[in-house]
Length: 159
Image (cartoon, rainbow, N blue to C red; front, side, top):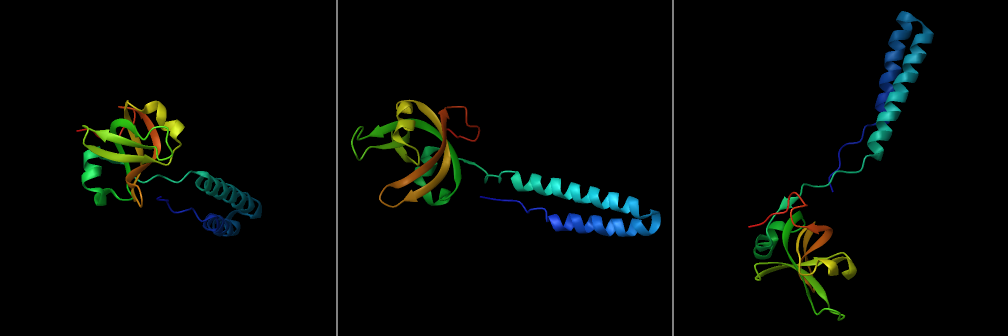
């Protein structure tokens, strides 16, 4: 996850204090303290705003299921969006698993969400977004963050 630099609250307060000291010599104490208090409030508001802003997500890479299946090393660890048909194998059994399939040939596993979330999508064309990884004992898969009807996830790619 990428993050941006945080605004150092102390820098804003120190800058306000320096400004207040300069103005104190020129215009009197009362005005200097008002400016210092104003600078501190502004720095506090900016600092709180930056501290409570959620971190930005890495860019989403649009890729087809074929591209993911045939060149997994290229997409390892990337936040990807793609489209395909949701399928289930070994339905209802302990080893049940879900995949996203394209043209009946290329498949990528779907992981990270309960079966109850994926089951309603089986047999449908869907758009998926999540982190692409190779998982030991499973193979290549997308850790699903979002699944929706085709055309509703902007970066999803088709061939």
